[in-house]
Length: 446
Length: 98
Image 1 (cartoon, helix red, strand yellow):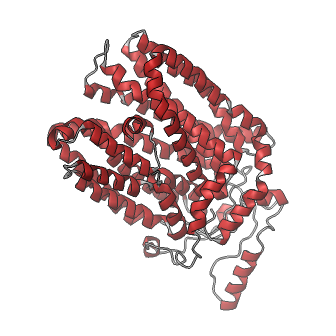
Image 2 (image 1 turned 180 degrees about the vertical axis):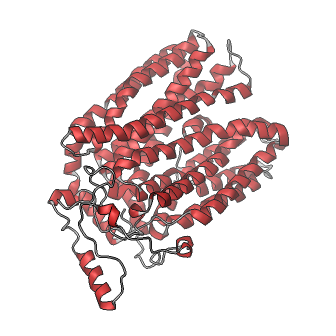
């Protein structure tokens, strides 16, 4: 039943190219939106939504990998934050504008406009999106571990040999230089080469698709990856609980919000998402560099977990303000403020968990991200089913006091990984390198 | 130590280590990287809007097509199952109808 779209698209994108997957996905979504405007039976609607979920699935896991394709570890925080901002932002923003479109042009135009937006997006991507898959011969962490870049002697030698033999300047042989970036030559690709749907080597790589589907499940045995999923899931749960009760509380006594006003109330979590993105992105990257300088110049993935300190205060605060506030009928602004805080902690959870996983196992990032999402979904479903009867039976006040403590306990687990995370990463090094080797041989490592 | 350093901060060692190929995405010019990032954001925004826009107009859709709110939400639940994505704001709908 739980066929996950990302288990399908992600391997395809890593094997054959991200550009074709993005283009196909957004164009298919446009078509599905036009169809949606003409559905009038339940079966059609379900089929429509199933396909939309299937074709839109790259939005979940592929974008993170695209960020890691082009940015270095110390820059990644702010671009992952930017992605989180667009993802969450579009979700809160869309219902607000949709209401106005429906008032002016009717509900079908909401779907038509979505299709138009997707086509605009398709044209933009078609003209400007480059393939970011690249077969690199250096592995994260190996260089520093051995004190020199001698880990991958085969490729450079090979490359030099070829260019000498053919008398072509294919690519300058990699040189170890202190300046690095400044001596890089001009790009060699023409615009048309960039716009090709598939890279020239896309189909020459051996087919590793079955292993690519299997590996995300195997990665569950890495403590860091499993924990990142747990962390992501446990932060998301509180936002699910908030949403399960939002329209109930806000449109009920004594608040009596109209449906449109409940929609407008979602401006508040939108602000929370912005604040969270600023905190984990700009502040987070600054904090990582500062910590690295303080700790003898080594940046460790565990440093980022300290950003959860804010969540230790904000999660209980937000949940108590929301639940107890609603039970005690505080002024509506208190509840709106709580929505902002809970969205903020949700954003912190999303970004710190993903960044921790990716920083730890950068070379596995693409597939490890799928593992994280699988864990998160499983948790969300497990807890999700129990949550509604629990809140209803216990009453807002007690349920949310309990939730506040549960949330505090969950977030506090980051201290375990601050203490032992590094040890566990070391212990997994051999296994990690084995899978990186496997993926490199497949030509899909990052 | 043979390592590549950031252009602006000499004390930062670049991880992952870029190759010296100018078409290595890690070696792209800032402008080329920004364009690539804008494409990723564009994709996220447009597909994200398409997935979320109907929530404030579920009632008009329901009135016009005769589909019940439960039917509409169940469809959404299935969509998110396939997204592999119990997204923050619509988790509850899956919870009720999925």
